[in-house]
Length: 108
Image 1: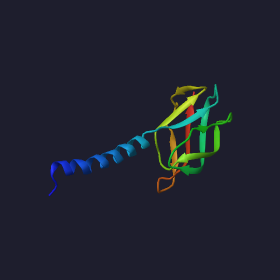
Image 2: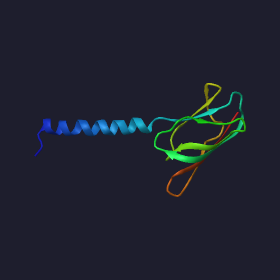
Image 3: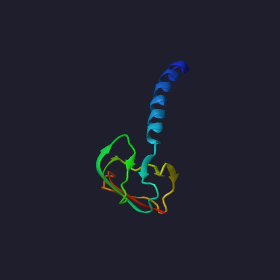
């Protein structure tokens, strides 16, 4: 039988691992747009990674060879250094297993 101090010693490391996992998953994927860009944004995933780096979108509104997260996560859209909201809900194209293939949305 576990006494309370032994239980606490087991619980603390487990909660630290859980907290680290939650913090790691809460980082939004940053999509950087050119200043003044409006229109459709299309991100095509060339590679997948566990951690996401900002995706740079070109003047044509595409990022043809982006490194994408393995699964859906929150988006942070930045245009000309200012955070903006997409004008449409982002559409995440995925495989049947949930692997991200592309992300599309519009901005005004």
